[in-house]
Length: 331
Image (cartoon, rainbow, N blue to C red):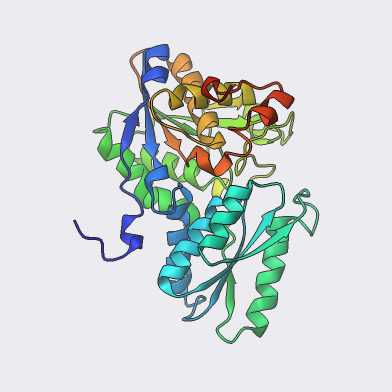
């Protein structure tokens, strides 16, 4: 096979059987290998759909600029897709995100703007700041600028309705009993849920929510309420985004950082060195497997490589300070 461009390599990622998680639960736990996308994360899909949607609507013109507020991976995806299509990209990111992700955005040729990590209610929040910056640039740049707005732009969810969900259905031969993942924007979970429920209305949909996020309480008890903290990045939401609207969750779980690290360590023993959101996802998949019982097939997302978080997730001192399990091969 010869790909016409890097964009043709986005999607059609394989499923990988997670041996440890499957053996521990008596279920088939399968990970959708989104880290094999060319930008090395699940967010490549949203980036491509958002940009193509803007082109179709005529808001993104040749030579235009793409602006977005992101914790990292969407910025990398937008920078990659944008550059391949001849657009410039400006990414606004919280300073607290890993240096590895910041470096990857710069390597893709995007302009990186770092801001303090403040709540969404604050106008200086990275998402809201990026929206204001896009408006400012649209007024003064010759070819204009768009705000990707991944949290409330439903082209994000559509990527997973159109592609990720149908891929999972086809790859499992329709034998999928449950799907679960964490939420950043909500596009992946809501989009895959919509696609799978169209084929199998009783498929179980779960949410794996990290500490510090509010969606577990929302889907479990009807109240947006954040509790705890997490060292995971790029996931955890305090509001119902447009991408989440209408989503029904059957099994919401709050997943601890300790569970996340145990899942990361277990996957590494299988040659999969993954990031924090993947650890949350797999820990959540094990919870869902125990809930449904042995013999079921459960799919989750292997979102990105652990190398993007090496200075945190694979830093013994960082983990010890927080009382978290340290990968034994790093001791």
